[in-house]
Image 1 (cartoon, rainbow, N blue to C red):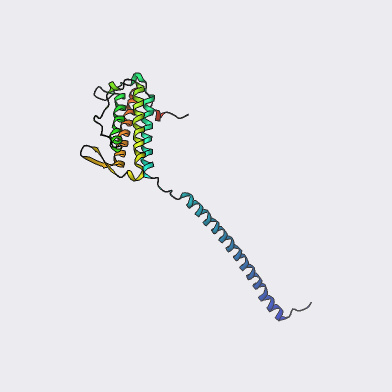
Image 2: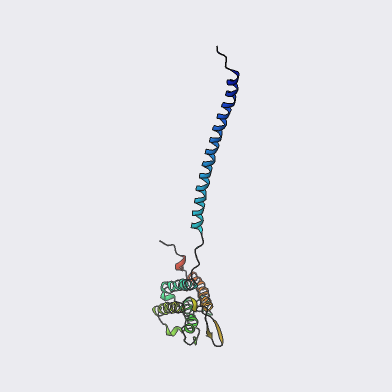
Length: 212
């Protein structure tokens, strides 16, 4: 049996660990590369998610107020069209307005906004008379017209004109935008009251019905 020279044994002792260390280094580098790729992919995904979640620019004020005006108008018009005509004079108590009078009041109040904005005289009376609007069709038409006229007034002022002031009541001025929101709130209050009228009359309001 041949003896392995001592120098060869020493060299082998250094060579094998060196190979092992080199292999370990290569594995570590591969792992690092894999981790880096994974991190890059995660970063790319995160960037994409952030872009998707970025807040979109706010809508112009004209669109916001017009959408609010149209939405409350839509709800009141739906009620006016839906409520049975034979219940139009229904009152929860004798001291309160009838269903018809509630609609006339809400629609008539719109002209406290529309008239001054369009350069006309403010409303002389708060509530149109029931005698003037005898049928359900008359009242539905009036409610529709009042909200259509108000929407046209908002659109006529455009974005910049919403901050101009107009006389909405003798001796009192306010910005177009502020008056519009005040009337929208007023319409919303009467919409809420009419929901109660529906329930007391044994009916379900249009917005509360199951959608097919």
